[in-house]
Image 1 (cartoon, helix red, strand yellow):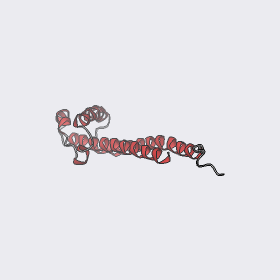
Image 2 (tube, helix red, strand yellow):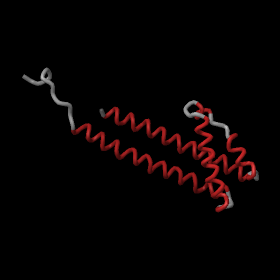
Image 3 (cartoon, rainbow, N blue to C red):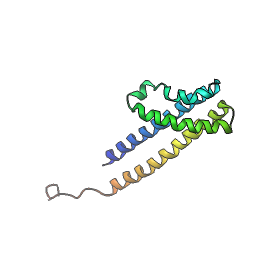
Length: 132
């Protein structure tokens, strides 16, 4: 039972980590486009972001495009508030990884509780395994 708990935790943690890694890469790419003076072309270029090779094996490209569109709106809004792309990425990436750590903590607490509960509750002894 404990192996199942930690297997599910590992699967969810890997998915969560991948989502944050994708988000950081998309944000860096969009800010790089904006910093290069192509602010008008950022909306068009959002659909042209090359999907990394490691990501193409695991994720549907349509899902990545939806994530690109969401981050595009966020970056455009934040670009109006903070004019420097370098300054923007300087605090967005740590903010994303802080959110990752909090999300991982939210996965770890139930995993530890389930691990503890699996140790507390043993399977009932069957008649064939009972001492005589």
